[in-house]
Amino acid sequence: MVSDKEILRLRKIALKLRKHIVRMTGLAKSGHPGGSLSAADIVAVLFFHKMRLDPKNPRWAGRDIFILSKGHATPVLYAALAEAGFFPVEELRDFRKLSSHLQGHPDRLMTPGVEMSTGSLGQGLSVANGVALAFKLDRSPRRVYVLIGDGEMQEGQIWEAAMTASHYALDNLTAIVDYNGLQIDGPVNEIKRVEPVADKWRAFGWEVREIDGHNIRQIIQALDWAEGVKGKPAVIIAKTIKGKGVSFMEGKVKFHGVPPSHQEMEEALKELEKREKELENEGI
Amino acid sequence: MREFDFKHLRDAYGEVLLEMGEKYPDIVVLDADLSGSTRTARFGARFPERFFNMGVSEQDMMSTAAGLALAGKRPVVSTFSIFATGRAWEQIRQSIAYAKANVKIVATHGGVTVGEDGATHQMLEDFALMRVLPNMRVFCPADYYETKAVVRRVIESEGPAYVRLSRAKFPVIFNEDHQFEIGKAQVLRKGKDLTAIGVGITVYSLLLAAEELQKEGISVEVINSPSIKPLDGETIEASARKTGRVFTAEEHSVIGGLGSAVAEYLAQHYPVKMRIHGIKDIFGRSGQAMELLAYFRLDPRGVKEEILDFLERG
Ligand SMILES: Cc1ncc(C[n+]2csc(CCOP(=O)(O)OP(=O)(O)O)c2C)c(N)n1
Ligand SMILES: [Mg+2]
Image (tube, rainbow over all chains, first blue to last red; front, side, top):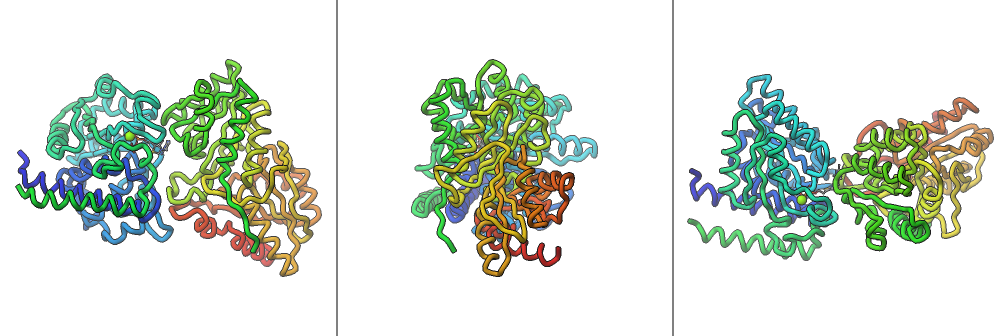
């Protein structure tokens, strides 16, 4: 059982990540806030509760691996890496600048803690499979986590990889689908239907659990559950809200790849800070 | 320095697509979840029954377009250049080029001027990937007006074709009367000391560099080569015979692009000293579009310095 205190700690971290996301995209005047905000709670639990990592030693041989298959969500990844101590938080403000190592999409050669270069959708699950296969060969206890977008599931390669993972019984791999319902041109199930999502994964040989992707306790329980699944890969379908945490961004297609204006950034930060104060008072 | 208007090539594309859609009822348009960016959304709003958003499924999109072509439609397919020519290359090879399906691929977001999205989205190998395919023709306009001319011509021509557009606004160097012909280059400025051939935004860079170099007594002939394949070897050779030196500049890898096409031609017809200028076998990186153009020495100052270096070192 996870303590209420731990849940509160993670909720606070997720809020911090959200503030970074808003500030990074606002200052860069570029980047992808919507799908970063929808993944903030999942990423907070992975980086600050679940995964075995050593920020002072990014290439530590015992670490778990996280692959951001929906590579455009760099703001949430960089925010987590900075808060975890992989590089100084101050560097976040140079996101997407020519002088910065923080590329628009993840670059494993430039940024400490980034395990794989991604950005072209659909490839992350295959890469995660490869890592999981290697860990099996090495009889390693290390685990692999991969975050996939719901629109990203329209890529055929996702389903090729889904077959691979179940064929090779990759139970050391956990896939998480950020099911925020939106892609660039509109709602995912209107642009090109992905439903029935859970049935698809099941038909491909996966164990499936559906959760509220903004409920920290559910995220933790699902990740623990996935670790317990044996002989099959496991996928967590996390129902989320794109732009979650900033009321004027929530559920808005526009904020996929459009940053907040300066004024919107200030407004969003105010809202998130208010939320932070409320959490402080909740104290539990 | 002269003042230039900056306009989106993709806006020109969106406008011409509407015009062509009215004119040709057999035109169908496919996109892969980037219709706002590529500007095909405008066609989609006007002709919803002839527009297919395929979602994030580029490989599926290319072969579907081939099927539409087999059944008598005239498909125009758009996404970012990397996902069109990179992700779906083999679908293009077999379903479109080999089958000679009447599919036009008009891709946006070529080159480093993609900007902040960085290396994964900056397509620097598309000319090479498309040029190498039999039956495939390759075009890249230099500005807003040339985009209109190129897209019109290409859509009205028969057979597979690839057109590369940009994300960034490019300086306007032509006007509404600008003409484009498949397989034709244009001498934009006469000169005698060196031939400089550009494509896309480097045409602007070369024109400005040529003005500056003139002040230093160096006379540069500037050629715009929007038709990379078929290449206008005749025009290029005639210029090379006059100047004896050829410089090429492109927002593309120095391997396999316009420079290579020119070198392949001249090596076999009239070998001269060449300098192929472009992205030097490396990936791009994040930054602002015009800042990156300068970083990779493809802005007017960068190409000017490269030309001087070429003249000095021979
Ligand atoms: C192969 C490929 N095609 C197209 C794109 C452009 N693109 C970036 S994000 C995106 C939509 C992704 O939607 P989704 O997976 O739902 O992401 P999220 O909502 O989590 O941000 C697209 C089409 C891409 N990055 N890669
Ligand atoms: Mg989505």
